[in-house]
Amino acid sequence: MKHELKGIIPPLVTPFKDDETLGEQALRENVRFMLRKGVHGICLGGSTGEGHTLSTEELARAIEIACEEVDGRIPVIAGIIANSTRKAIEMANAVSKYDVAALQVTPVHYVFKPDDDATYAHFERLTREVGLPVIIYNVVPWNYLSPKLLVRLMEGLPGIIGVKQSAGDLKLMADLMISIPEGKLVFTAVDALLYASFAMGAHGTIAANPAAVPGVCVTLWNAVQSGDHKKAQQIHQALLRFWNTIAADNLPANVKYVLAKQGVPTGIPRMPMPATSAEQAKAIDGQLAEVLKFDETEHSTLQKAS
Image (cartoon, rainbow, N blue to C red; front, side, top):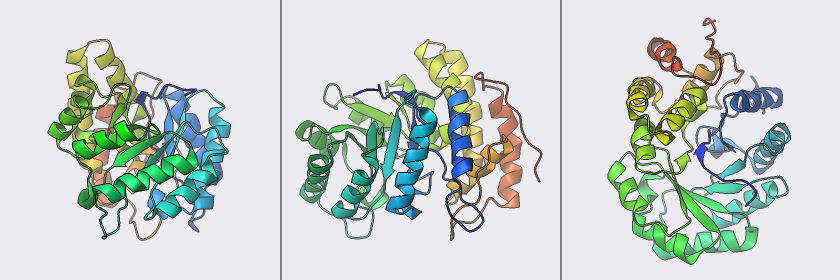
């Protein structure tokens, strides 16, 4: 693999114009913002990026833009949220011509849950036909893959290089950490417990908090890696208070609001997702300045609310 996948890998928001088409210039500015913050990689097309609303063509264009801006400096991961093996392969093939380090792929998320063997067959065909490394995005509540199944997938399919664990149960992550095959990766998306995840040995994070306040998360990662747990705990407390203000069914919209407050253009969420409400904005504003005090990557500025 050209790039090592580790550390802070924000899942970028997808900027949409007022007509809900892709805001290409705004996306470029988002990538540049992340680069200035010293992140270790970026992901496009994930949940925070409203990937469930993107067409294959839109995802491919977003990946193309990101790769142009990154220019090989950090890895780019392509998120795929699809309800069939065929669709997942279609989207993977569409992005494979760009400099993509890995795919982040959800299990099937509609109401018809496949059993373990069917899930295995899904990822077996995907890795066989596409040839790009795959990170399983373990996020779907009614199709949440057990540590046992994840280990089976990683042991049986060389193309699966790791998992992004998204449930709030840290015990499940702990069980996964002590059972994964050697050389495989575990990324945390337990936003409320990034510090605890890093302390347990998670290889990094692909989550909403890093998308909203990447510099803070880079500082947290560096603190844990250097053994400064007193500082890391302080950041954790501020980050948790901040997380509690943005965690909602319109989380991507709230991340866009937070980025806009930092001077990054993000556009609107796609319908039917509502924009950040006045009540949410008030709560977010109350914690954003506090958490940004821990951003040591560059001078952070907040924009006045319009």
